[in-house]
Amino acid sequence: MSEQTVSDEVSGVEIELDHVTKRYSGTRAPAVDDFSMVVPAGKIVVFVGPSGCGKTTTMRMINRLIEPSSGRITIGGDDALKLDVDTLRRRIGYAIQQAGLFPHFTVAQNIGVVPGLLGWDKKRVTSRVEEMMDLVGLDPADFRDRYPRQLSGGQQQRVGVARALAADPPVLLMDEPFGAVDPITRGNLQDELLRLQTDLKKTIVFVTHDFDEAVKLGDRIAVLGNQSKILQYDTPESILANPADDTVAGFVGAGASLKQLTLMRVRDVELEQDALTITADESPAAVREKLTTQRKQFALVLDQRRRPVRWVHVRELANASSVSSVGKPLRDVVSVQSTLQDALEAMLAEGGSVPVTGSRGEYAGTIKLDTVISTIQQIRDEHADDATADAADEGAPA
Image 1 (cartoon, rainbow, N blue to C red):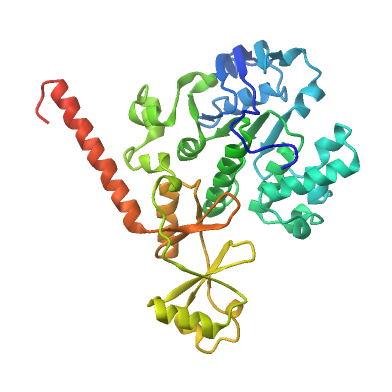
Image 2 (image 1 turned 180 degrees about the vertical axis):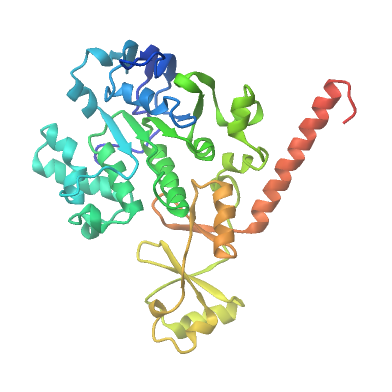
């Protein structure tokens, strides 16, 4: 990667909101009242709360899409309220629901907007656009010249993220960016964001009303009440284990123990390596022989970049002219960034073990139901042990 390197270095900067308030004329109560928070550099902080509580207003004051009435906001030590507003916004990536792409611009033109405004030369912009498309999993040759209307919802969101990151900003603001896509695509986009963040280490402020999404994505979660009052600001683990009050407990909801699966990633468990993988250019007879020899019923077809495409059953190969003409397309895959809850849902959709992909979409192994069940049992045992210990500390019978 030419301008962003995969390393342990943090490219994001700290954001501090100090006693920030927003009042609208003609209203008695402020929309945001005396909000103070430090967003650590290189971390994802998620604002979660009910509709109308002020979470989006709070986030938009960071890049001054909404001007605060009072208070101070610093970004990397710079006073955001004293910077030229256009200069400020070009230093902050912004991704919103339904991507917000310019419909009359191609994918390449959309991604290259901010670098172009910053005066980058054409060659540098073109190189950066291709780099960003590859980073978010869109083949430049296939997608560069398409228009937004020619893309699926998930593809549009990927372009939106690429555009937000194109000028290499230290800060990324994301306002319910995945709220308008189907659950499977949403999970894949969440995984993609986590993969990107592992490489890029930006400072990300993410707004959502979905607590499960907050738990999956956030290094820290701010549960907000009316007027953006901070009800609890902590790690997902701490909020799940110890909600600050009944309102926060309501966001956590029932099944807090099962939500622990959202804290565990597929990369945390051992993957199976027993699937027979093949490529589409192999002959059906050769694949059938491999399956028979290994006493397997299914083979997993990989494309030229070793990405899983579909399962093929041994019976389908008997009269097939090519491997590419048969098989069951994958309805869902998970990545090493996915949660075990994602994996469980994918298994229910696929009806069995699910392929797992690595950092660039390449095949990494499979995850099976037995693995998730044993993990759930381990979590239950740990909770039972904790409950016994707590009861003993309080002098009560377990």
